[in-house]
Image 1 (cartoon, rainbow, N blue to C red):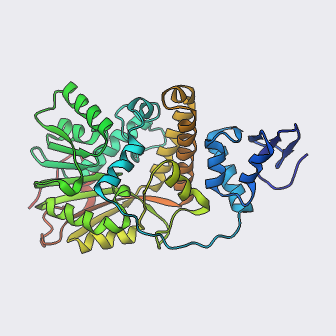
Image 2 (cartoon, one colour; image 1 turned 135 degrees about the horizontal axis):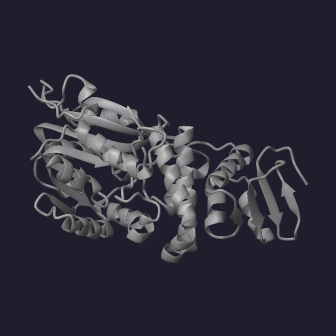
Length: 392
């Protein structure tokens, strides 16, 4: 039986009956028992995602098609929903660490199934259509360090350093003295082992530390894919702390995801609720206008803003494809349920960036009391040059 609904979906019921909602369905949803139909009453992405994750329905088809079908169902059938203001969440040190551990302390082996060889879990930088994920991530590291005009001997701080790729690149290629901080024990142990193996102990350190508890002064500060965990209410404090840690002639680059919603409400069609429940507890996305406002209020002058939305769409698509190709191994490492969570999450993120629900901005800034702007050359040419910039 076919319907003209235009959704490329086949529904397979428990009694053997089959319904095709388009002539050539690419996704098949098997509903093993009548009770699973509750997910399709006023469905949204949270309900449909839960049904998939909990195993109450079985889904077959390419992972990106699966998410697009779910989005079409939610958009077409879901009730009109009132969009309420986001209530600010309480981001204490303990709660932030618990959220980080929930997301990042799955297992290093699990992340290695879909990340690049450098274990970089943030947006890549694609210079051409032929670039691989490995190339894009190395190019991203260099793009950040080039924007920061990193010089030999500079003291670099990486807030939320992940598995240590940026601090190691800064030390190896640029000759910087690099410090990374993380709240993930798994990341800490992995990064320290990589630093030891590369013989960089004299130039690289990684510590288990909250950004609120760090002391010192740094010539360059990078925060890559971390401020999503800070919380909307804490953004002013976060940027003030960066301002306090930054040397008078220093530079900071904040690389983070933002929402396209100017009022910073959660993502549409129940996607935000799914992410909060299963993936990123307490994650909050500001609009870029709020980020710029809070940076300025904290005493930072913005020098450059670049959108990498399309780069992140491509990065997430690559991650989703790699995890899908390794899903059997992933299920052995992390279990069937967690593997399904990550499959739909990564495919959903790719769709979110492709559709403009989210964006990724790199924002370069310096201390506003450095009125001569000596930290930044007059033009952006230095970011794309092999020559290190000269400061006058």
